Image 1: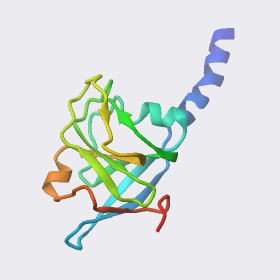
Image 2: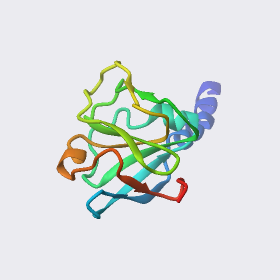
Image 3: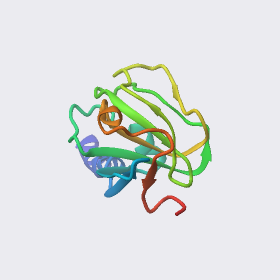
Length: 146
């Protein structure tokens, strides 16, 4: 009985830890297009550590944005991530500094940014190529200097 009561008190805390708020952002491409995405926000260390792990599907216009307090070199991996992803590294001004396309699910190989990044946007693999998203394009979102 004691373990059951303790477990039930712990479950809401765990559920809260992996609940992600959602928002919208746009990517403005060099040729003037504005591409809209619905994103989940990974802002706490626990949320950033969890990310899209264990997910088996994601809508074509969906993604997850990882927000950090400062720009720094970033590296992600695909451990426990079943979805192949495009990983976009973004600086404080919202500029895409590099893109890792078609990442390998479940890989533990680090995927580094080519330059310091303040945020990382994960989209379904192939999205960047299909929509011609490239480094230098701008992510319009409230977290970035405008």
